[in-house]
Image (tube, rainbow, N blue to C red; front, side):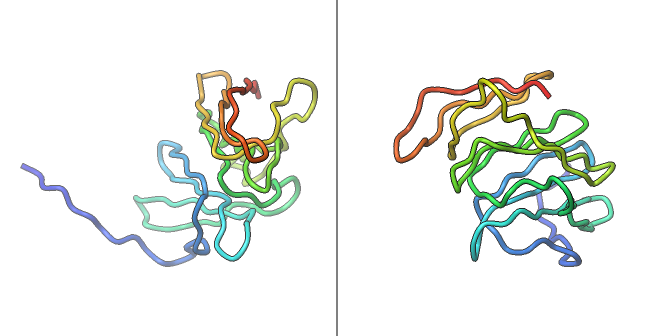
Amino acid sequence: MSHPYWQRGTGINTPSIRSYHSAVWTGSEMIIWGGSYDGVTNSGGRYNPFTDSWIPTGTGANVPSGRQMHTAVWTGTEMIIWGGNPTTNTGGKYNSTTDSWVPTSTGANVPSGRYYHTAVWTGSEMIVWGGTVGSSATNSGGRYSP
């Protein structure tokens, strides 16, 4: 019979302290991104529990602007982040294999900027819903097909 327990992770290359960030599981790594502590950040890290090690996420071309209270989903090949505070209706797609970012589209039908919203991955689309727009809750959303 196994017993539940906690094990402390490493501190090597650990991302900066933060809250209101996002996290996804890739099947082999946890990717965290964004959030805030002394202001919002547009950085993150990839944690591998099998090697107990962190690798920073790329901060080069196309990295989204810093934000907190955004959402993230894992598509099976990339992490998509969207929305957040400061209020924005932009996002990015992070490929952990190439450590690179591509912006999400900002064309027609993009939902209004929001934070505290929810998001799910359907297998082919990211659906965002609700959240706070300005200072009011909303009952709107949208579907993003990468």
